[in-house]
Length: 451
Image (cartoon, rainbow, N blue to C red; front, side):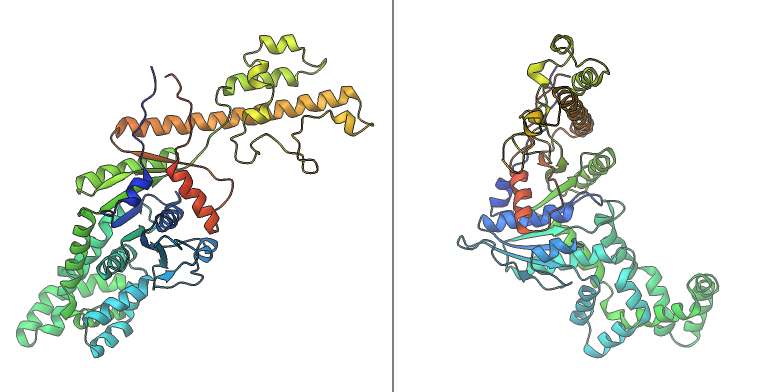
C-alpha cells in the first residue's frame, strides 16, 4: 500500500496572484520563518510584485544581505531585486518600542504624548511587556497595508514559545490596556471627594495592600500616572487589535505555517493549523524546511550497513562473491559516493579531486609508488565502508523525517505542503535567498516507498 501524499503547495501561484496582498509566515521558533519570509519576498519581487517584508529578528548576516544593517523601523529598498520587470523589494525590521511610540504620538496631543513617553511604566511596557511585540507587529502590518504603497506585504511573526501566542497576545494586551484593571487604577485620579475616598477605600486599598507588595509602591504610582495620561487612548488598543484581526481573516491574506521535519515542530504546526481553522484564518499551506534527500534512496540503510560490515571484516579482502550474497549488491552499493550524490556536502558526481577535477576513482598506488596494492585495497575498503555507514545514517534521517511528515499528513490531509530541501550552510546573502525560493517552488524528490 503506497503512503499518503499531501497536495503540493504551489508557491509561485500564490505569489503571482494579484489578489494575494498579505502573506503571514508563522510557526514555532527556530524553524526558519525569517529566512522563509525573506526568500518569499525576493522571489515575489523578481516575479514582478512590489513587496515589503516585515522581519522580526533576522540574523545579522541576513539583514546585511538585504541592505538593512541596523535596526530600522522604516522600509528600505533592497537594491538589485526586481530590476527590469517592475518588481521592488523593501525590507524592514520591527522596532517594537518605536512602533509603540509612534502609536502614542499619533493618538495623543504633544503634551500628553511627552508625559506618556517619559513614564517609567510605559517605558517598561513598550520595551518588552508580554504580548507587546506581537501587538506591535500587527500594528505595523496594519500601517503597511493601509499605505497601499506595496501590493504584497510579507510578515515574519515574532519568535515565541508557542506559535499560538501570535494570535492571542494582541488581544490579551489590548484587553489589558482597555480593561477593568487599568480603569481601576485610574479611579483615584478621576473620582474626587467622598465618593472618590469611598471608591479608593473599597476598590484600591486591597490592591495597594497586596499588589503593591508584589509590584512595589513606586511602580503602582507609575502605573496610575500612565493610566491617567492614556485615558483618551483607551479603547483604541482593543479596536485596532480587532481591526487587524479582521484584516488577517479577510480575502487576500494567506497564512503559511513554517515547520521543520521534526516531531515537536510538526506537532506545533498541527496545533496552529487547527487554531487557524477555528479562527477562520485563511491557511495557504505548510512550508516544511530543511528536508533531507538522497540520490540513492534505492539503497536502504539496512543494506548499506550490511555491505559496510562485509567490507570491514578483518582478514582477507572481501570476496566479490560475498558482496553478491549481501543484501546490498554491487549494482546498488559499489559506488557509495555516487549513490549519495544528493547529500549536501558531496558534489553531483561524487567526491572531486581538487587538482584534476576527476572523480576519485583512480588507483591510489598509481599516484604514490610507496603505497602497496594490498594497503591501497584495504584503504579503499575502509573508505567505502565509511561512506556506506554515512549513507545509512542519512537514510535513517530520511526515514524519521518521512514518518513525522506522514503523521502530520494523516491528521491534516487537506493541507498543501511545500518541502524545502536542506542547504549545506546558513543563508546570508541574496543568492542564498534565491536558492531557498527555488527550492520552495520545486518539490523535494522522494521515492515513494511501500508502506
